[in-house]
Image (tube, rainbow, N blue to C red; front, side):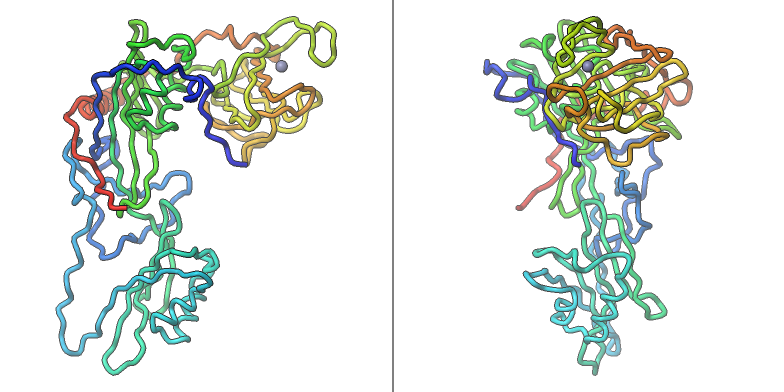
Length: 469
Ligand SMILES: [Zn+2]
């Protein structure tokens, strides 16, 4: 099941009163960002093709993203673009190399394409066979481009294949090349990706959503901002005209600029009713990336009070007349009405101790966060892929989806916070921050803060991609 990216109802344009007035102070721009926290990677070496041989990276985060060691603001397309391959010094006996690209047409098989490119049928067969286990040629899509490097020997009619490369998905490619022993070997590769930091800042005149949209802030980025500050800011009531927001986020593009994705949120700030909340992304050595305020205090709270986006509290904690059973009984949690399929998050780091059917709860998950505290989630439509008893989860990780299984009258999340096994009112939880950065880690964090501030305040650098499509 695919999680649906949903904007909270109060952010959807239809529900936003349009008080369109002029806004000020907009800064939009882009620049490559060297995170500064990772050892600078050398600019990808001058290989003639886009595919850089590398071991298959983990699917979650394409590790070998080519991050050019460019200082913030210093923007240069050339930084990650390899120089064109030097023309080989030709001597009369040298075989001629031809680089060509073929496009997959309707009904084409890989064999057909190689055959048309002039390969001997035996070699075309060898290519198809050597892809086994790495790529299924039936996955080729109409319009897909395959780069071929061929070698034409003098006196030979048919060219021989030197290498073949194609893109598998946004982050991965495939390269098949002839090794020194003459055998063809296929491997997954990391596609060269360019990461660019973008900044936006604006006064909110009508709604946060409208202000963000005018500045091309992606919905996913905006949702993340809301999630980050949801403990401190009530986005339905607190935001007023005149408040301000700022973000610095990454856009990741393929080297050719053909595809683009929203990357990490590096910085967010909300100024509302005289108070300012800031968040900086930072990855401590050996730890996971997280968000910190300017002083280096983790924004991660002990437990989330609302582990679902855009939900409306539909039933509070305490005694109430049960909507199905009819008699008064204790409501051991709080109910959040939300559309079926809305992602539900783990309220805190912990271990899943139950994931399955459980009586009137329907599909139910229970997480243990400490010896003392746990949380429980009921009436779910389904569970996140791979979620089961014993699995470790991180705060904010999707564990399942809102539904109406069990004893329930409509799609909602029934959420319980358990203290020593006894349900307590989740809304009574006091915000409690966890870690604070110290020593050398704090120093590295400060350097990161300075870099992000320069991106936020710096003059708008040139646009990063001269898109032609
Ligand atoms: Zn309930």
